Length: 172
Image (cartoon, rainbow, N blue to C red; front, side, top):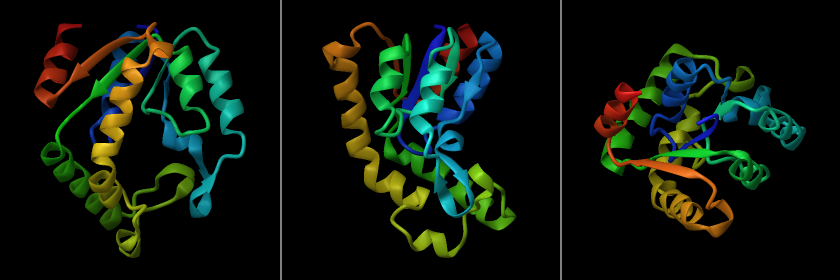
């Protein structure tokens, strides 16, 4: 486990696990959303592929994402391990909602200095809407990828509940 993807749907806890695991294994942690959104008004990084190519050329890293479409295969090709947090919607939604409420109320700065806003809750791109609407599709996509012969080189650890993930993390 030296080049790790922590995969799962929005709000599952990818960043939290990746940060913790990165600290334990002394792996450089890269937050995919911070690489993707690099400016105000949710501006997208036009050098994303170059940046991800550079970081994944390194011998050791951990990334908290399935990967945006432009870099998804690059990440999966270069990883050696996928940790799939495959939690049910009823576990994820309270997490997403509480996180988004906190971020909105506190005006917490996110990627590129952006913030979640009350009006943002009306958008289909809002994390709460996205987590709800994309849950099934993202689970199917990850499932398809872990079965894809192109990615047979990957060690896949799949956890169906936060307690399972915590027990595994404790065992390291």
